[in-house]
Image (tube, rainbow, N blue to C red):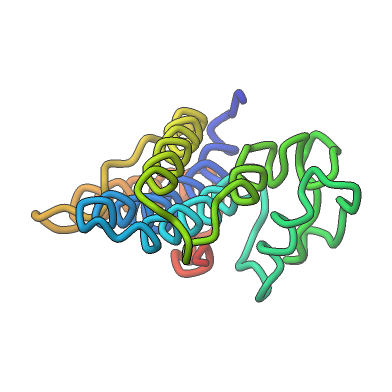
Length: 192
């Protein structure tokens, strides 16, 4: 996807912020659960990561605001299936993506693989090592694909040193938005 400066500031910046706040933190829990040999928690962390990745794709496609309770889950459950449908509008309700396909693309929310991958996850309560490791591999690949699609690559937000690199980039993004005549980002708007 090619973006001009206005699109980067209006859609890319919030999507990158959602990525560091939601996707990175959930993905970090995958590795922690694997290290603890907690297979059920690993699968749940995979599920949380995929939900966050789907929401990131929605924001990147132009979605504004928080998802109404249950709306993202419903969208992902129906994505790509016979009951897929466009709904809502720019006032905050979820709707199809810019390509006009139901649920934003052929694979689900925003055209990504998240809906399909979520449906393929095993139930966490019966996950074993093999299932958890296989899920982790697939989810890491989906996260890497999404990160390549983002116009702004953000450093990992959770580090031993703190939150400083991402906060500095956040300030730079605010300056760009101001220069383009956009309002400041309400950083808590894009939270799952």
